[in-house]
Amino acid sequence: MVQDIIAPMSGRVFRIIDVPDRVFASRIVGDGVAIDPTEGMVVAPFDGLVRLIHSMNHLVGMRSKEGLDVIIHVGVDTIGMGGEGFERVVSPGSVVELGQPILRFDLELVRLRAKSTLSPLVVTNGVVVQDMFGALVRAGKDVVMRVKMADRKARRGSYATRRVEEGG
Image (cartoon, rainbow, N blue to C red; front, top):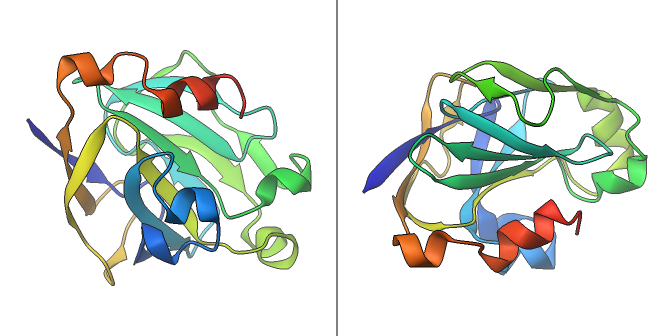
């Protein structure tokens, strides 16, 4: 099954290998894209469940109604900001609709304090079959990638999903 993932942030789309972080660039966590945001808002990329929000509010884990798991990570090395400039709009366990705000963040502060504003959008239980590399996308409106879900057996308890849920 192929699922469209809508942009969770407005901005320009980059390849995941362009993210200046070895873990994301090498696809250890999963396949995906990165967005260089133009505004400080993260919205739901599909209808689904907010499974987790990191205690520093820079990372969201979501599951679509179809069972696709994604991680949205604002910037690179933003964990070092200690949550400053990040605000939750919803809580873990919230059922959200496509385009619904999830996080707000101070983009200027991220530009000043993080290693990069490139924000990975990673699928932990699927493979990207098409991405919109180079496109300018609008949050909650434009397709940023199409993903083929892994089979059911592979989706259960993937290493990347467990690691994120454990906070690492």
